Image (cartoon, rainbow, N blue to C red):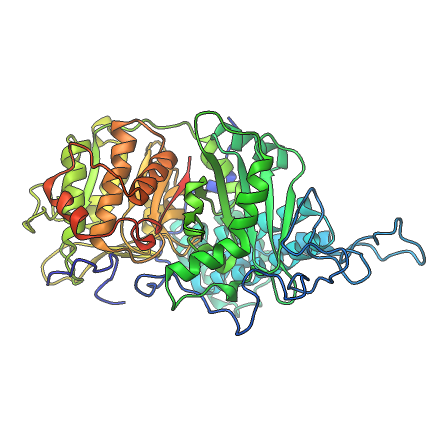
Length: 595
């Protein structure tokens, strides 16, 4: 079955710094649950009828519960204190009144630090769940509670404490995604069948405390909590080392309270924040397409960041501003680089990378850079039960021939015939991930179907069904090869980067891969082939870092006067004439993470 020109990729047949403790190995070896996104646009809900699109009410007061008196309508930038979350009396929630020192009866001690510490201690409960689904559910609940604490600290003017809460929540999510392993199987493998038997005989949730501690000692040396969040100066230093200007958390509001942007500039210092009244998970439209979504994204967040925050930073030399986004909750589904206003996109004002957390970014920066070379592994549309991806095949063949002639090519050729080096099975990819020989190379390009937590690869044998490579299997493979140095993984498969904590992109990064390029939703096959060819052109021919290569490729797609490189093959030149590369759906689905 041959896919139409606009078939979305990834549609399966069925549905230096501190050593990085955030990259804890080994990762879980089991599959991680995940699903496919709807075609073409990210998921999300439509805004309520009559809700203010820009976060400002008709009378000029900000939406989200702030009073008109003394509150900023658009979410003004403040240093260490919120601007749009003022209460009626001019006091910040949880903080001292605007009139000066607090008078009257002594206030109760702040219970929030103890609450956050209690949430950190949930790590043991996460690792000792009876199955991966239970671990993920417990982690999601803990992350939600950390998010509530962060909102409270932001409302009371303490963005530094909010950062600690946000990082703790993400650390717990990462703990469940990368360190959870089946308890009895792990104990059996460690030759502690006595503990495994006692565990199986215990009632779930009522295991003796001594047994739980014994098991934790065997499984993780007794340490079950996520690592401490990185200090603010460390985050600032890492940003400078990665040639980034700022890290920005996007925190959804919980109506009627506003959302927030929390900014940490390169070089350290106190974080600043912007109250964003319209920034809510439920505020991102979906059914009306990317153009409406991009307009919403500008109004509620990107506009204030681009127009107020970026000009406050020192101007970069010889490059655009670079911002690392940590989008919380459902906001990770929004293509922030495609936010637009008056015909101009946010990506034309700055380069954007994405991170699960500042902790993971620090871990990535701590690893020595790995140079790219014209060797590696290229996987081109392996035969699966899903529709064929002729654009992906043309892209993979072009990338292999033009930029990585020394790489191994598996899957199918541009004409649909089998590749000589292999069909593109999960075993072939796993073997490459653990191959430490220099000839193996350090670049992996995966042009195939996929979902957030697995890739659809060729069946290991005729009639055996699709061969899946799960995020857990990726983690286990990399954990078994600690000396493997991989510079770049390109997940050209649709939707492979959507489910952040439990997804393939995080599994690769947590396993030590320096940079990952991933698709956040289904992307048009032919348009994606153009973007990815241009990414490798800027990476290999112009020797740009991965984040800049993606940024330049996206700008090339938007440029009405774009000129194809002389080495672009004829098949891709035809794609260029048959598609509109400037459509947001053609270029905005891919994001960069890592170095």
